[in-house]
Image (tube, rainbow over all chains, first blue to last red; front, side, top):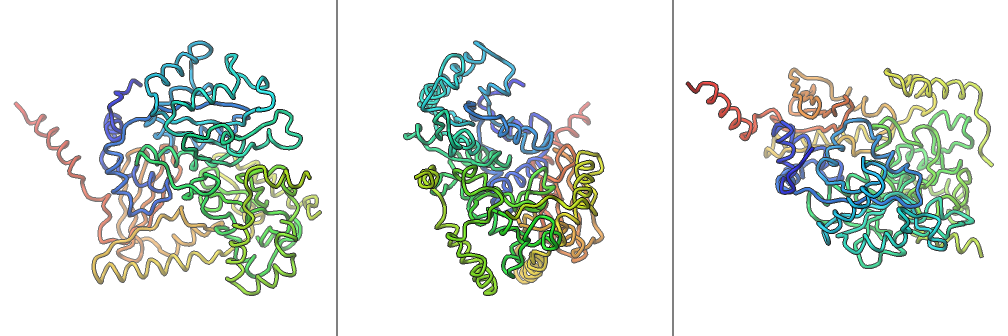
Length: 358
Length: 157
């Protein structure tokens, strides 16, 4: 569909025959996407009336395409997909119809025409030690990132690989994989980690930029606070069992069947900042903890090498089961302790793996 | 190592889940419950109390309130329990724009459950509104203007 570049999002919806009531529905679900209170819907409507389409370039580096799968298979035609009508996705090797020289030409045109104003999305890590391991059109990922990031308004690292190195950076890290933040130093950078990230986390960043023309508030790992502001444990519906000291000891015991806390079978919820417990997966059908498996901590740095998926968070960090039980007996106080401990244990990229390797 | 092989009965139930997960009818609720456990996060009574205080404010000074149900962490079956607790009132309205939307008055007048579906029929958003009349039920002036122009054009000689 050819779209007037001066058209606002409201113009675009109107051109599709969508009524004002439909527009308000779009605004209500958009506000929800950004984790805004429903009372903010009129503000979102006001902003979207004036919002213009934004050029987006999406570069794939050392990745498995799972992040794009997460987004594009979010559930068929959804309101979220409208966001992709509201942006101009000028280059995405995986999603665009053009290929080869035509695709490269499309990217060059988008960069030239929108210099200083486009959003750059990146999924996948950078093979810093051996750049030749990943090239597109003969250009290494490292060179391409430097070139394209130079004209970007902001860079969004989609998925744990681009945000923190992810699986390519797992031991022994044969390519010397590093996160985007190692190279992009002079542009606003937003990390949207997860393996894959929740589709709503990706769209919420785009929607925020589209709606307000600004970037969302970020935490110390550059993650949007609206989505990564609380731990899985903070928002887990099994939290009351933790408070009461009721834990599953294995995946088929009575505690597991009764839906008790999965801390002892390796759940990394207390140290993992993500929105799964609230927004869930597969159109809200379920999420790992609800399906009976502990959180793997996939939105945290070095999750693949960190402790093992079925080992409880180390007793040296958490004080052992006896202390956990005692804290749990203290009721709500245990929650505060867990939250405080989790914040103290937030890991900078690469740090603990290097320390463990010593 | 706390991980142990699944009990064959659990494996059977998980198989049932897998088999039905991609089907048109969705997962078997009984199988789901056996795996997820019966859980009460305690958030349903909290939400009902929030609605209660919002109703008091509505009557006191006309302040309206809205809750984004999908932004609250709820355990398996708790959203249904919340909606069951609120019940269904006399009025229900639907409109179709970007997928179906349903405005359902609850059993407690002044409480409305607004559910937006996407074009594939999945819930895209669910809100509890505490108000005398949900804004979505009123005709927006922009649409009234467009309708008037259309009617005038049809009546033109």
